[in-house]
Length: 185
Image (cartoon, rainbow, N blue to C red):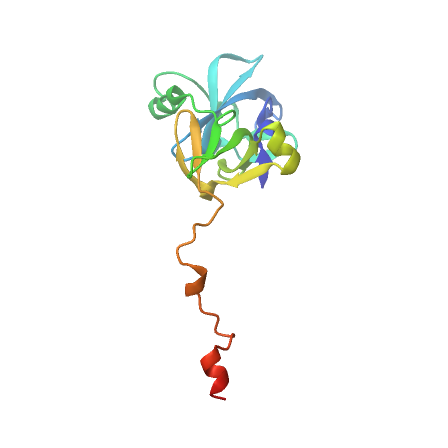
């Protein structure tokens, strides 16, 4: 199931073991190399240190929130989480990144993104355009398969326009009869 990133802001983290809320999500930790949420920062009245919930520890995303087995699934954010700290230090957030196509045309900025809840992979980028473009066009939704490159400042996507590689005169229509074939019948 696809959900917008805004759905995960302040989402309750519920424990199956105690049947109660452990805390709520704050910021996602996104790996730009995979375009995947690896963990969520978690805060709440019972959480006293900077803590995270790995997405692999989430059993289900439901109407009550993120369902986990127990409070043990929430880990304190310390130096032992080496790979996660590497991703945190990248400080990647797609919101506000400029989206440019491979021909250099600016398409807009990322305003939201859709997440697949089984794998927490970002599947679609929702791009808001300038006011002038927004009047004539609807909002752009870019699939992850269209993304060519992600940099610190922008996301480069494949252009929607197709470059003509052959002239129209070179294309043969097999259903069209030529002048020479008309005379031979």
